[in-house]
Image 1 (tube, rainbow, N blue to C red):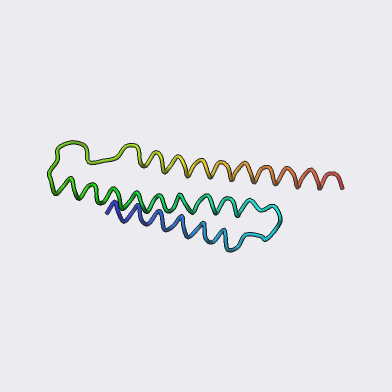
Image 2: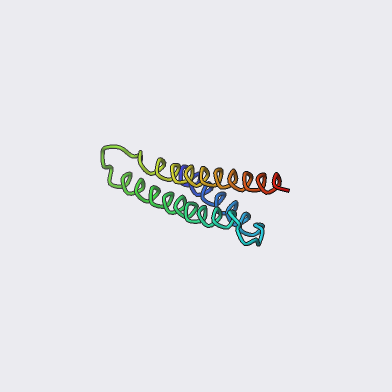
Length: 107
């Protein structure tokens, strides 16, 4: 069940990134292309992480190794990278809005 949830999250992120890439403006300075290209490797990371944890847990169940069966660092790393890209996109949009407002006020 956890494997399917992580895989679903990765596929959802990939769908969003490819949609942004497909419908982004073809302008000379488009932040959407950079944003989508930053989301694509993160979505791949979610899918690879899901497979890695699934196989790791299956091995631990098969060999009955005592200890922790969870990964405390993986979700923090993936979530942190996603939040970092979202924050960069937020500030990029603020920059574009400020630039537009400064050009509009000059007219």
